Each structure stands twice: as structure tokens, then as C-alpha cells.
Length: 152
Image (cartoon, rainbow, N blue to C red; front, side, top):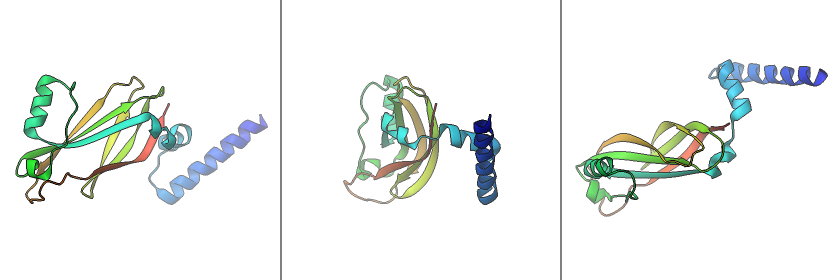
């Protein structure tokens, strides 16, 4: 009984401190943060990012996701409507969700990711617009980090 009181006291103090200093948390998100936050689970998640033209995206949507996407160069994307494709696969045994911070040539945006433990690719498609600056045969730099990652 004493251990339960200590645990709940620590939980309440932690919740109070998080609310007081950040103002970003609700009681539900505090509990989620305490119980399910597992940034180390990222070793079980495979992520692949691509910037592709509307034509390539149309071909993939019509024929299926069976073949591997190939990243196009700036020259191939120049003056074409482009899309960022983020593919996520959970190879672990736990359901996972979180916020992924993506960077395309240092432009940052966030994606709310939710993937089950089934090892199936989940695909997110984001309209990126047109590249109006010629950058030659270089490939766009696409990076990501997990801002928050939960597993259960």
C-alpha cells in the first residue's frame, strides 16, 4: 500500500511540474508520456523518404507499391509538381505512434505517424510543390528525427 502511495505521489508531482513549466501537456498526454514513451523503439521502425514527381506518383498509385521508389534528382523534379513520400514499417511486436520531424533541404515539417506491429508499410504522401531553382543533378537531402515515439 505504501509503494502505491509513493508511486502516485511521484506521478502527481511529475504531472504538476510538466504542466507548470511547459503548459503543453494535458493529464492524458502526461500519462501517455510516462507509460508509453519509448524513443529507443526506433530501432524497430524502418523509414524511407522520397521526393518524386507527380508522374511517378501516378504510376505507383496505378500499379501498386510493389516496386521500390527511386529518388529523382533536382533536374528531374525541376518545374514539376512534386510530392514527399514517407514510408514507415514497424518490424517490432508493439504498436507504435509518434511525431516525426522531417527536413527536406533544411525545410522542417512534422508528421503524426501511427503504425501497427504487422510489418506492413504505411505510406504518407505530402504535396511539396514545384522546384523553381535549378540545382543540377544533385539529389534532395531528406532527413528525419523522432520528436516523440510511443509504443505499447
